[in-house]
Length: 185
Image (cartoon, helix red, strand yellow):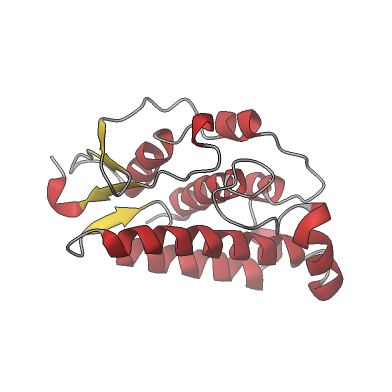
């Protein structure tokens, strides 16, 4: 996958991960990116250059852990989510984030902005950052929201479709969007 697409996908993940922190929608029990939460501690621990990246990595891990719990309940092994994408993509995203930690000057401005602990984000502002993606076709299941994806969609389009099912009305309860690879039409 090309770097700009990977960066866009990381930005999408980080935006949703920020939405899930305690101060906003409370989907995971973290406040690591907020100045009054863990960000100040990380800044003192690793310095102002690396603290935002450490916080970003932590909030992504919290979101991934939440989704891994949900995925464990789904029969079969072909379900994928925003934070637990297909293995090849997951590896590429991990390598790209590792690159940013090694070369922090390469971090795109949009990702810096999402991880800025001085910025007091509000949920509507972060939802606006996700873009005006049309709600995909999905059905509610006992596992979350199963999204219908098309075989022709790129990985970024699949991720945007998953994120488009999330809503401010989900406050306090993460309804996991997912798709099954065998269901692509």
